[in-house]
Image (cartoon, rainbow, N blue to C red; front, side, top):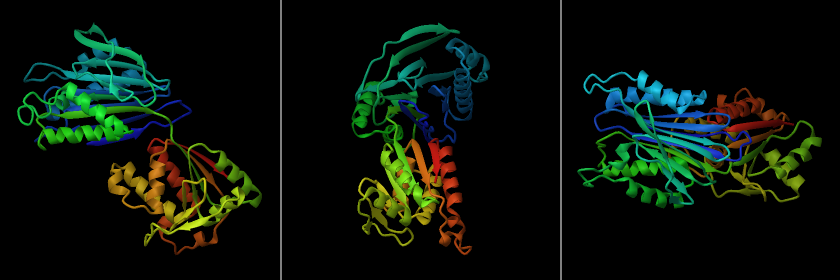
Length: 397
């Protein structure tokens, strides 16, 4: 099971990526761990809970713990109230006579401040400047449970990785006599952080190693919950010529002044930008596709594509990514649709400059349903990006 999300920018200095990967114990359909993510106006809350045992009962315990803890913290409850409520709410296991679920709480504020609480889970890995750093923690007794807490200031580029005990015990009694163990996991994360700048990639790499150490048959539920603090990624997309030619210069100036990456879609739009910027427009035939029109090149623009056909194919790929398919599975080519979908998916804030001039070719009723009016396609594209957690702004001309 794999989940990933990117918190929208909303004028915040940091962007907080979250991602989780879970491996179910061999022979069990459900994972006994649960990850809850809540996005608040001031912070992101991530809770990793591990239910007693495995299978359905463990899944229920972990899900209740994660949702109760996350929702209460989201509503402003104290940790004492959370722990007490969790203890009173969990169903008692008839075999063990216990209502038990461990948890790790990580709350990252948009100014980089972090609050963390751990109960009986392995210690969180905090990667600061590429190295796992020890955190000073205070231990408190809450409702009979020893809970460790920490508050500290993180920096841009830091990772927080919480794991269930199935990760640190990976390979126990088989590949490794004593399991993988926390210090070895820490060293692996330090090596991974050198190359990876994504919460999803770090979580997946860690899960892949666990699967390997368990020889494809996990002896316990294993879950990784990763947070990554990074700079926001901006993208500005210009598509379609303005209704009034007098607005050509304004669109071109907005695109030139925009931060981050720039994309231009449509032949007429590309000619307008090149003309207003006084730069050449060339055709790029390196990546030909039987269905997607070729690319173009404009100095200062990251990607130049054809218009409605390319955007429609890119929208299909974004929908597949939103519904859980991996990037490597969906974005398989280097044509305009694949490149456009990747740039949009990897952005946090997207500003769409939409020209309202009508292209007579797009009014043809014989066009396939997917190649409908430009306004409809842009609206669907915006909706898809917003559902995936991106902040989208649209300026019409």
